[in-house]
Amino acid sequence: MDLGFIIAIFLIGFIGSYVSGMLGIGGSFIKYPMLLYIPPLFGLAAFSAHEVSGISAVQVFFATIGGVWAYRKGGYLNKSLIVSMGFSILIGSFVGSYGSKVMTEGGINLTYGILALIAAVIMFIPKKGIDDISLDQVKFNKWLAAALAFIVGIGAGIVGAAGAFLLVPIMLVVLKIPTRMTIASSLAITFISSIGATVGKITTGQVDYIPAMIMVVASLIASPLGAIAGKKVNTKVLQVILAILIFATAVKIWIDILVYNN
Image (tube, rainbow, N blue to C red; front, side, top):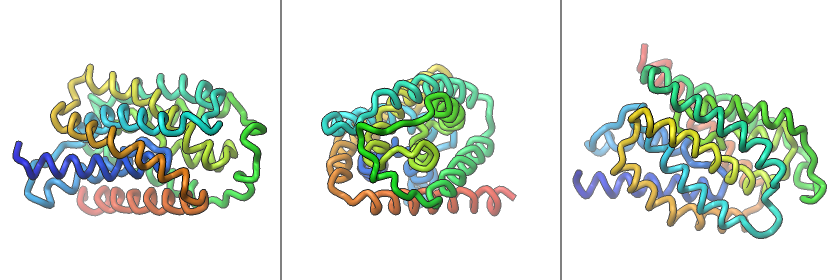
């Protein structure tokens, strides 16, 4: 493992984790394509979809810790929402990550593409008035939240993500949770989800530990910095940034699925 490889993996982890802390996501939806495509561009070792999903699962576990810690004050963490969605997504993510061992490379990439496409569509649905709701008056359907979290967990576990890139749009559009509360609470929920995903990937031998540890170090540095920045950015701007990132990622993955795999 040369220095160039280490630097590339660290930068991927740092950039992805900074964005994840700012937007309330685990960062896997950014790092998944970055790990797949960037190393080969510079003549470095290429990762398989199984290796990328394993590395992502471990990294998200640590990235979300830093983000939650930065948001621990201010009343943004909705405990009822975290409990309702956290337990369901934990079970779903373990099922998905454990079962991904028997899936093909194309199957994992296809799952990622479907999740990213759904998230992109939801993010472009108008979200009027959600940030006018007082944080102490937020109400939501707990059974619906739990069911959606379980479904998201299965798909996210397959690709080694914690599911926040899909959870955040669902919380904003379907459950009508204010933006900053969504960002803070989704980090806590994805931390819980990442436990199931990480355990599933490790027990099925899908983790390349050295790149994973490099990503972890980058995450612990960058995620809290991103969360601090996220508190200062206008909520509408945060929504637009997230929508653009999800849409661009979905387009790239689907181009590869439809063009290069045929």
